[in-house]
Image (tube, rainbow over all chains, first blue to last red; front, top):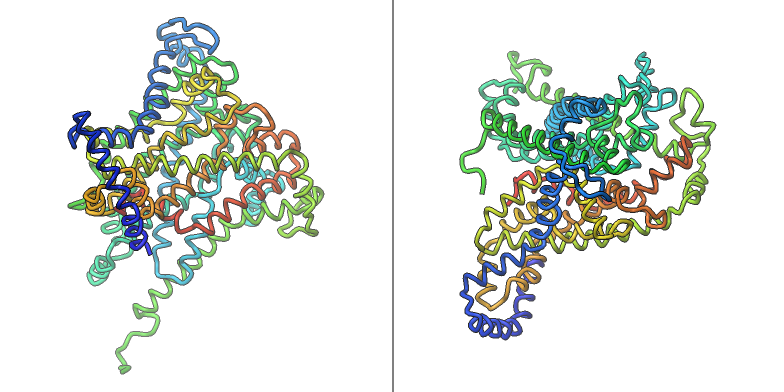
Length: 331
Length: 289
């Protein structure tokens, strides 16, 4: 089906193509473009949308916000240079900044290891020869594709202290559940619980690699009398270590950006009880779009950028020690 | 066959293996119940009466199926309008994303131009920049362009490529032999024709993956509309839902009815195109191509 499609397209385009090519050649000769130069030009034209996007929506904005971070810009005013004032304000005057940084780091520290370990555990369980495995994989992956406001509403209902599903189920095993989103101590664990529901998204990455590990390796280990744990530690873990590495880096960046959950599940971004859900980005959002203090928000954005860059670099440096790469790996 | 020295049946390897697999199956069954329970809870709450939702202990099955909850909730706010707006944005964005990302990916995969590798490293490294870092200056840019309260800030970026999809499609295209492209060049085809007539048909599975991910992303996007859209008539479902919460407060039967309505298309999409969802994750992990 596929191959006949292409040959068809091929012959159909053939004669017309020839004429165009001739035309192109004459144009090329008159302009004096060599074949190589033409190929270069074609390349740049093909990737030009990305170049425009990169310059206009990434690099340009990055540089602009760096400049703005040293000013008191508020979108209508002129930019007045105020030096490092914005950065000083973060650390000396803005108590909410410190709260937001603490809340975010708390969330990152718990969510990254929990989701990574959860995804690996799930992948191990789903990598067995069991009837109905396809069904199980579908079920566990499903929550990962559901997101947005509707899911946050659902969890607000599930976590409702008196009549929610979570506390109802906890009551079955004799646990008096906490007030979750209404108790400053429990708001962040509530978000972690919600996050764990969709842990199946990460699971797929691990499963794909595990399925590629040849059965012979495990059989050989069986003959030598290896325990399941030894097999996991000596065969599976090295195999999936590049994915763990990738997963830790991307989920750290993702966790630092937590915003929507907190925005929707508290009263329009108020930060929740005792500001326990005032995350870094929520605080930045309030500064930028509630009071239009763009200079300060830009400084916060750049600090976030620097923090994430440092963490990524540290992850990459540490990764060299424990990530196991196969001989002829990347293409 | 059976000698007296044969191990008892519960000592055999096969028996142990079966016990282990049974144990894993039970564990997975319990786990999937936990996973599905919230979804069941959403549906059952959406059909209950307010009085039944408030009662303790809560019931698992609604006493009476109040389908009217759906009708009433839907009529409380202009949801039809919002659904059409969302559908429009998601469709246009998806078309743009599929065409542009595959075009750019083709450039990186099959055209040899100066600086290609260096530029591709930049593409990859932009994936490591948190979106919130560029959000504030992007907002300033779009507001200076007079694009606030239009759909342009939500649509234009879709036509300028996304690093992740470029990476995904390039990986896929690398798996397609260069000979095909070279043969077409010898026949006198230009790159644009090769891309359209050869590459697009051959990369169909990956394109479907990109389309689904883009559509799903646009359907669930809250941040973009929240930042740029002020007119209620231009709202999308996500931002509409968010304001709906303010209107109906904690009338959970309405909130859950609308949540089911908004999630249902995504769930259907998932079940129909499950293969492509999974393929997307696998390509991105680099196992393919």
